[in-house]
Length: 275
Length: 163
Image (cartoon, rainbow over all chains, first blue to last red; front, side):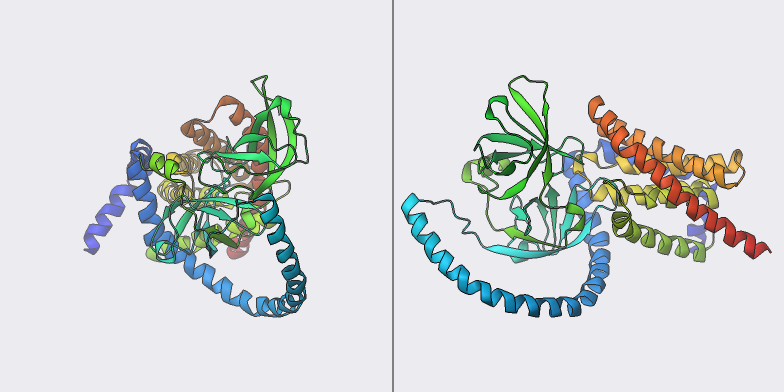
């Protein structure tokens, strides 16, 4: 056995490492050429067998250290919240009356699953992260993920005890957004995996500082989740559209806890996704 | 490299990724952060040669690819494998081990890695130009600065040992 390992190591190190280089490069090229289903299974296998357990241990150590400090903070917060609850209760009663008056029916009445971020891309382009909740907790693919500050992304792959979250800056995630002030609907995406850009009609009069929320169109994200603010408005290739740089409410690199909304895609979108 | 050497490298690899996920964020200015992973690959290639360079390049690239969009799987893996091997070859055949040369090789490796990555992911010309000016260039300079400090300290410790 030892001799076999020594033989393989010698084979790899001979000729200034050219054998090792060709082998690893071929592996990389094979991954590039593989169909998406195989790539997905490579990633899922690597995450669930190797990276998820390792990151879970690292994350757990950090978590226990933070618990004592968090406990103190929670006690203070609890006292403050008790005071606020009293005022909020009154506000809710008033809101219920107003909802009835305007027939407001777009409530987020979906159950929420709280999850902890246990892994994210250690590289320079942060487009996905892993959370410690999976199908056994009710999490399914395409469920919206958000934080206290705003929209984070959606579940791209749900494992049994963990899931991958596709962040808003993932170039493959495109969503419909609405300007809160003008109510005009646009389209949000990231072309480079770093910055968010939105396209809205020129005539809408959207300008820097405006807030963008989810429009509810598209069937995956419910209406009204805050997404970000318009940082800069630029001319796009199309005269009828304006391209704008969007600054998300949530800084994805410092996320620790997120919420998964147990909302499945609308039936028509679900059929399209299944296809 | 003996078994202890591989174990040391593995521990260092884990530490580097932990640094990249924590310290790199704290050190970032205007979204520009140093790339500790690239420093690690170049350092491994310089110190242990092309075989270790391409091996750790492959492992580090694959680790980053696992958390990238599925469509881009393999892009980081190929880019970092090539850089690890090329730096190892450069060191083995042409370069002396002085500090400016190491920092220069680090910068070159950074650019080559980014160029291969952009080429493989098939991003448009405008996006690549924008990313190059706003991300690659400043991050390369920042990484060279941090890498320079690491290499300087490493050389310092070696000199002490020899003395």
